[in-house]
Image 1 (cartoon, rainbow, N blue to C red):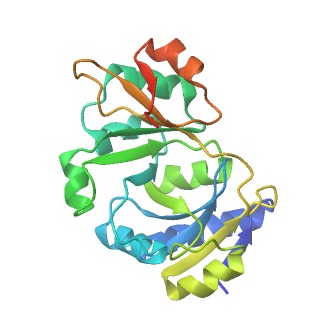
Image 2 (tube, helix red, strand yellow):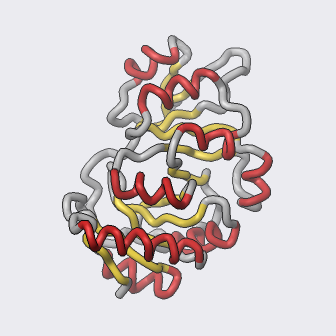
Length: 224
């Protein structure tokens, strides 16, 4: 069973953050709480670490990589030039349940090997993971289930992951089950094209109307 730390205890939180940093440095995954669910996390700028995440998830094909950022200021390192509309959205809704898909920078492509020419970025509002991100930088994440199997507990994930999983940071207030629909997912890859559009790929806590108040009438629903 992976070592776990109760983040509601200040001393356990301190030790857990330290052990999580060490595990990430060893190219291991860690379990972290977010404002929507638990996630498996690895160093987003390490190809070997991202390979570990892919192995844990049993991905046959590379999905668009999801990355948690410590701050909006970290976005240019992953996305290169940041469109003004994307910047406005991050200023309005981050930290919070908004995931934005943007073209990835050439640097990110080198670090992440054969991944898509895009990255899905978010800034979580969970204080524990936010504190970890301030110390580690961007973390690549996916829901805390392994090998395309819905895992009902940390014990199952730990058993399946083995030594590839280093530490689990546990918030007693976060359920292992999905307690929310997850974040709103917005595709910003068509910004700057003619016509310039933002496409809502998945509805969530942030509505199309809220997005339109910031971005204007270019916000569209994805076609069914």
